[in-house]
Amino acid sequence: MTACLYLTLDPKDAFMQQIAGSTCSVTCLDKIPAASDLESHHLVVEVFLDEKLKLEALGAIARFDHWTGPVASLLYGGSATEWAVRSGLGQRLVGFYACPSLEDIHSAELLAGETTRTEALRQVETFFSDLGFSTIICKDRAGGIFPKVLAAMINEAAQMVQLGIAPMEEIDQMMRLAANFPMGPFEWADQIGLDRVLAMLEELSHEYGPLYHPCPWIRRKVDAGHYGKKSGQGFYQYASGGVS
Amino acid sequence: MKQIQSILIVGAGVMGNGIALVCARSGLEVCLLDLNTVVLQKAMSNIERFFKGSVERKKITSDQARDAMERITPSTDLTAAAQKTDGVIEAVVEVQEVKEDLFRQLDRHCAPDVIFASNTSQISITELGRASGRPDRLVGMHWFNPPALMRLIEIPRGLETSDDTVATVSALAERLGKQPMVCKDSPGFVVNRILNVWYNEGMRALDEGLADAAHIDQTIRDGGGFRMGPLELRDLVGLDVGLQVTSSLYRRLGQEKFKPPECLRERVAAGHLGRKTGRGFYTYNRK
Image (tube, rainbow over all chains, first blue to last red; front, side):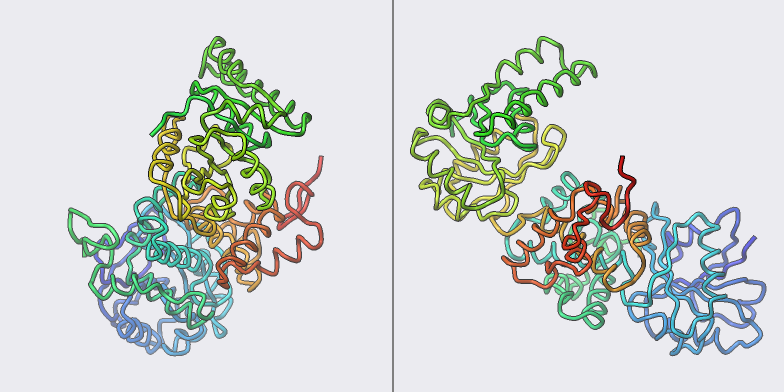
């Protein structure tokens, strides 16, 4: 049984629920870990969205020199290399991309930074594949592979609505009907959170250029606090209200 | 708004014959026209085979199949066919001059109230409308392959397309059991434009060396819940087709995201067009 320390602010984190199971015991923590929190855990999975909190948590782990396990850090922006170096975790940090808000997706992209040791990468890879995840190793670039594809599609769809090509509800329906998409781009954006989509697009334009400049409409939505399902409103309105 | 009872389908290729059988199945009188008699004969036997299959799978009775088959008249005579139809669906090769020429001819022979619908996936409806001489009565009717199974029909309207024309063709699509969705006439309409971002992102990931082809497909499939990844689907549809579509989008929209990726261009240049040549992004054992 693998013992995993899971760092998140969301007590209902869907991704955590995916990894907790027969082969893995998960301890959930919503703050910067103390030395005693790390003891007896094989690895840390960290999914903080807030940059400051993320850096402080990873930095704290780096400073406890008696705990030397690997740390898998969910990337929203920035490279695995950058986080490994900034946090001081150097050889032990493995970046990963997954969709923590999509319950039925068991897929992760692992990114090793320039300083990451192969052993840490192996351990994190084994951890995910033992849990039944489909994993791939991706070059350390912003957005990995699928999150980048998704962000680019959402951005394009948003621009098309702005250009009056079709309304968003119809674009969603068209992609499901004609291209066998499991979800339309706007439904997808609401599911993963518009704040994350925007952060991803900004990071992508920084890394790859103007191709990924965020559509102003997405920016306005985030300005207005319309983050998607989690805030009760995104591109669509959700009657049940926010979950967190 | 007039109801269309008889339809002339021009072009008996994959799309044309699929559209013909859907129309016949829904009770329309269909004239399937192609100047190439070999293509026309092949289309008729495809349609017959399709109906036979539907009978075997108990989707329709053999009487219904026979009636549907009888409703389709193959023809090579454009002038005669144009004179006795309520509407036209154009499904000829994706070459603007060919389509424009055809619409000019149809305009001469069809009654003034006949509506023209083009199955183009990438040519401007507004430009076709202008060439046809009846821009208010010309609209896009973009079907997806295979027409018998795919429910969506995009209805891109040109600048001059009238509301009545849009309503008539949308009603026709509904009568055929399809879901019509109206959009603005713009390059790639809705589905192909977004789909090409998906394809090109997958191919650019390969260009950037983010992972190999199999892993790129794997993570997009598993991460997104798609049945196939962009590279394997590109192999299935054909790399030449992909290059043509994205080049056209790039030319018309001028945006880098539609610029044909290097890995696509070099494979097409080498003659690796996907499954049909045994090699594309993957290698296939040819039987």
